[in-house]
Length: 632
Figure: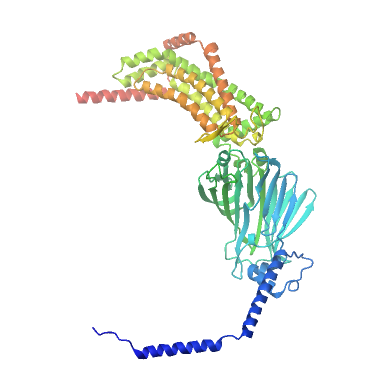
């Protein structure tokens, strides 16, 4: 292998090149006079840019004294046009101030930068700390239209400056926010605020912008909101905080309570950001072609994160008409009060979760009118008690039927046990004779189940009703300060999982009442059951339920509205009283036994269901006998 040697000619070449470069650098270095001139020019440029920036931020120029090209120097105009394009005209008039208007119900602030609502205060309400209710404040909301321009820009209205105009028309206040290219070419947000109304008219329209907005690109409306906490129990409030939207001509849906949820829909007519007892809604006269929605839970630690509950976002496309925007909308900022929302006749009552199907029907047409009537005559705590009594009286015949059925089964128990013992080796035969005896006696286990099923829709409807009853908000009763939130009789020095850091008295009383009610009914059911295989385990399970149900009630309702716990407490007390009256003063077991014996003597025609069951059992018995013969 050839050994590499240093090439002296290469070394000399490199040295010569290095020397030439150094000489050229020395020859071209600036003189002291040139260095001084460059530094001076640099400082002047910095001063000009700083002056232009300060003028753009602090100077407020009105439309009457502004003349393009005269009030601003050339550098400022270049900077504004570079940043805002055709809308530099509005930016030149820019003011960071806010426009403030009020009605008897709402106090509003409009941000001139972006032209949208920067503050919404509901004047008639306060939160659990007696602080005013703000739905929008301190940048928790954003409203933006994103669009492309014919000069290849992508602009967001939230970054552009609008010029406000406020006019009065009798009881109404009109706020016009204009994003101008010139006096005759602009994008306008027009808000119409009326006294006595939480609904505001809202119009988005453009004039003369068909040569500014790029019609080949999507124009999207983006609405974002972080919902403030307003209630004492952030977990309870968050349970009813959600995105609700209407689509396809009357259908409605919601995103639910997941940590993060997204969905899309077509023909969207409104989207609501619901905060349990308060709601922000954007409604369209003509539906949006489609919409996408997002919900994100912000409560990670209920002891720490107490400012916001959820973050909501909606994206809705705006269609151009002849290259212009023209969309008629409405804003609703107000309480989630069923009566107020329902009065608009725009399907907004669906925002209040009264339940679906028959449950919603019962709430809308029975409990809402009844509770509204009672609440107008007496304190709301008393109204709950009276309504509970009325409901229990209405359902007392159901409890009577249920208890009567159990009494009949208890009387028949010795005969049913005898049948099972006689046919212990033939279960099918035992079932046939059991059914025949029950049919003759007019007693059936189903007769006890059916009344209980009749009560379920009422119980579930009331479970939906109380958390949605806006009238209960901040109404006191006895030791309870707010019937829409939990009551506190003792604070714990620690937090119990699923229970909390406080003791609520009404859930405790309701749990005790449930225990005694179940003790009465469970004992009756166990005594009425005939002996059969697996029965000891069933009895044991029913006894476990007698203890488990009250404990579950105690834990589940400790952070729920005390109005709901009050209802369950009164309801179970009344149920206990009804059962004791039926048992001790109405039902006579000897008389019932005599009636059963009389019925057994008379031939009783089976209904279609009983006849079909009898036929099926007889066929099953024949098949079993045939199989046994074949085996022999």
